[in-house]
Length: 386
Image 1: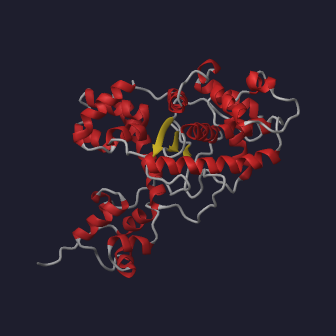
Image 2: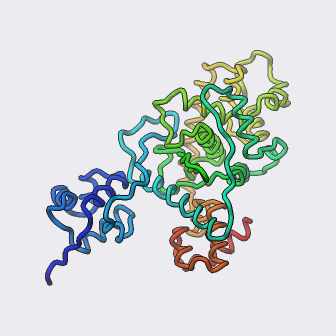
Image 3: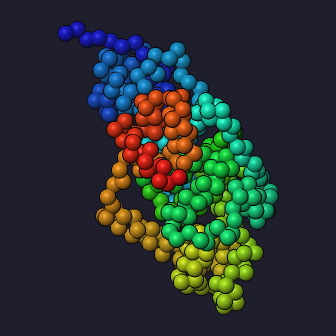
């Protein structure tokens, strides 16, 4: 049988590989061809067969038709800096999985805006704004006001998962699309943001603890207020420290924290805080123990020496939690993963358009990345959560 060649645009082949976060060598290995052969396709001196092009489409997670575009789409570049665990070093390049999560976030933002338009809805305007010259307490209060946070609500949730859903719902109600990355290791990225308006985006890693995801939500929301979305740059120490402090001030408002029974009962001038005290602050305000201690440090209620000592304890605790979770983990069903990843706002828009016959079941499958056979389970699960 004669080999049937495809006729992709070489420039699009290069664009697809680079936006997938892959080097020439890595992509060639996945495609089971030599790097020189892939380079010749990208240079246009040779052409892949149709089965080879289909394989590239799967590897790069692009529709086959994209390779026939007249020119590469001018949509976004892969971002190279991001919020990571404090004990991790920064890689030179992002991984293909991170590149995919960034691309998916851009796609879902565009789709959400289209779906809103199709049902005649308008996107709420996120009103938060800030500069690095503003006071941390002031910006924290602005963020709380922008999303409608209430102290009376923060301490009433029984589980950490409920705390996360609370803060996520506040951000989405204020016009921020919140998504969860499902394919990333926690050591690679805890979150990133897209500051485009309307409908900026915050993405958190679903492998993080719920209260860790809460802190990342607020950290990334601060980047959006600064109009500085992206995957957080740990080399920009000033901006990262500012966003951390604002996230802490949002979770633990100054006056409320200082007047809390736990802080009032604490020994004046004592740098050491017991685990029981930190746990109580965590329960009362909905932040993690580490976030509570960082906030106490900011307010000069503890010392850098004590925080540094406790940070090692927290990191060990996180590692142990992750290990236990992996050992005991039973994977959630596909429809639960789909809802968790897409979030309430995006899932609602997709299902509302489906119910109104604006989109088909196949469209729902594409938008939420779930097989058609799980659609009824997804609708049932989402109705229960709503």
